[in-house]
Image 1 (cartoon, helix red, strand yellow):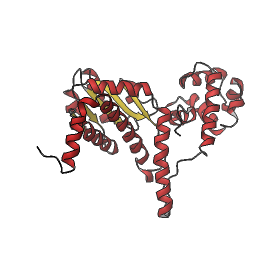
Image 2 (cartoon, rainbow, N blue to C red):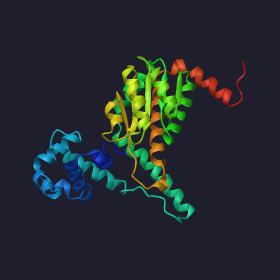
Image 3 (cartoon, one colour):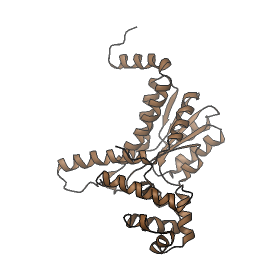
Image 4 (cartoon, rainbow, N blue to C red):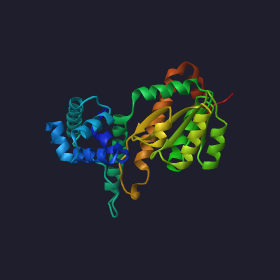
Length: 287
């Protein structure tokens, strides 16, 4: 069963975008998860070598009005993790046997999806689906592995007759963003949320009053801050050996959510397009 709103996952994913003092609190919590539910504000402040005020500010940063509700959420998240036997992401190790690699990749991908369900905002997904249903056209922006996610979305939305195109290099992205206008939707895919080409295109899309949607890691990135709608993913910080596998799987899952949300809501009007494209791809369609 997927975990929902797991605060420990949120703390892990947001760590790199926290202030130095907030990082001290985050690190103390992550290193002492079993003890934290039993600590007072002062106790956590002492453990993290910060102040009572710093701990309370950290709680607000994480979206909680007070310390008590924050600690209750920590306890609930800890219980959920225990029920799941605390499965951890496992990096690829040189010399691993193939059966081990197969098991680890499958577990990592599954965990990326489960953890993404813990941080993604359902209301933001709903807003994104509504924007996509009512837009004139969809433009997708992504570089590298994120560009592949954009291509996947292009293929899906094109099947239901949405005007949709993926732009996967800096020059074409700037051109496409310049031609966007009110009533268009621009989806920006970036795990880090700090890719320069993506941010340049985002600024142009915002100036042109397009609706901007970010699919990015759960943190306080420039992409998340400047987009109208933010769809957060959760991915592990593993070494270069794993590439962008975890983030790609999480992003593809979010794309599937958006596509299914639009197709389901408009099923009566899009089912004929789905049938036609299915038949022609199967080699069975005849006029």
